[in-house]
Length: 281
Image (cartoon, rainbow, N blue to C red; front, side, top):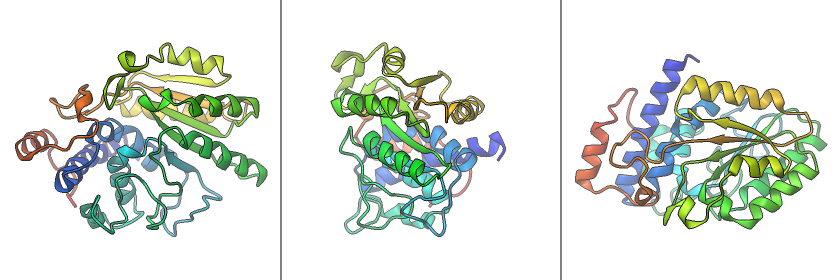
């Protein structure tokens, strides 16, 4: 798929996120806006996956886990636009009995969701288990795990990091959403994890730096490099330097938009910055 087309989809996904969170009057817009480009690149240009019929096991295809499950509005929008479920279902986000819960859940049977996430720190461990299962079955596909910046404060992340390196889980590719923001402030003030790339290297991981995390060619090139380095005995992590709230000027780099929906005036101001480029749900 052409870069320009991917950029158009990402722009529309950002619009989807704003509409979903505003209509629900609940949700986490900041991180979802920041990850739109990477999620679109994964699902529309990089991962080998089958939207329909959806296989909960993920056997014979790449698997994606959103460990920072609170940013699921962006993921749901990408899944719908990739053909996992009807686009119109995005209008049910966070409603009672909706399949689009505020954190990804499996009991509702939403296609695309294989693991319930949002209890921060757990997704990487689950991803390791799935990756090891693929190795046992000689399934040559990869497991991708998205991690939040504040999430790596969790001790379980670093236990999992040690385990993955020790057991040479080299079909695992983690992506760190390095926006330096979490729910109650700047990560460097709450619990500083810098120098983060050096830490992952010290834990035995192959580390790739994605400094231009909103540039589609750079994203695609880095993802391609990650898969090229797979199978060499080390798990891989891409440290992606994103901007929380990307695309909306008053949300960018402001941690207060981690989990706050816009009011009517803020929504109108934000949506005006993200014109419809495909079709709204």
